Image (cartoon, rainbow, N blue to C red; front, side, top):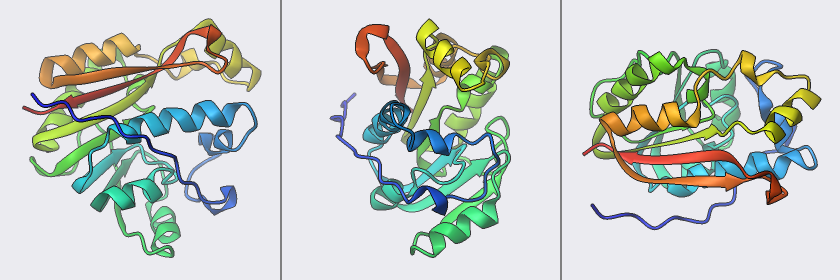
Amino acid sequence: MRVEPRQSVRLKLLPRNRYRGVNEHDPIRFYYYPVFRRMYRRRVELCLGECRGGKSVLEVGFGSGLTFLNLHEMYRHIYGLDLSADVEEVSRTFASLGIRAELRNGSVLEMPYPKNSFDTVLLISILEHLKPEEQAQAFSEIRRVLKPNGQAVYGVPVERPFMVMMFKLLGYDIRQAHFSTECDVASAAGKLLQKVRIIQMKSTPPLFGTVYEVGHYIRT
């Protein structure tokens, strides 16, 4: 298997007030906060750096469309699936910039797309919200909608005391929302797809260790 070189990507962002179509729990504000923004942006940049471009990309959990400016430069067609985002509002935001995205509401556990549809399926901070027993179904669906030799790129947090503490300072108990570990996700992915690599992201400052993991797998 040929391993593609990693790309260096800088996340392109709109002004914060341009992002629409999500509720108050969307983390978009953290991408602009001092201290937090460096880590939040870096995790997305690592995921985007694994995307090799092509005709079509599906982002599961697209939220406010944070990645769309970058994906528009890499793919001819952007598709998005999200449980709760206002697809019409997000679509309008990017249509005004000349970026057409085909967005739908739905779950990774039962995706409304035919098999062999996408060059890339991208999931950033989504899979940790599934229960461990749901990971197999998620990756079965991901594999189904990928084209042969298509890639799945995901990012998931690596829970560390530092990360738990930082979320508590923001008023969040992540154990109420994160049900699967990075090991659960990698194990399920490896049973249905072929691993290209796993990248670990250190905290800022790095003395707190690894706080995020990016997986790159392909459908063989």
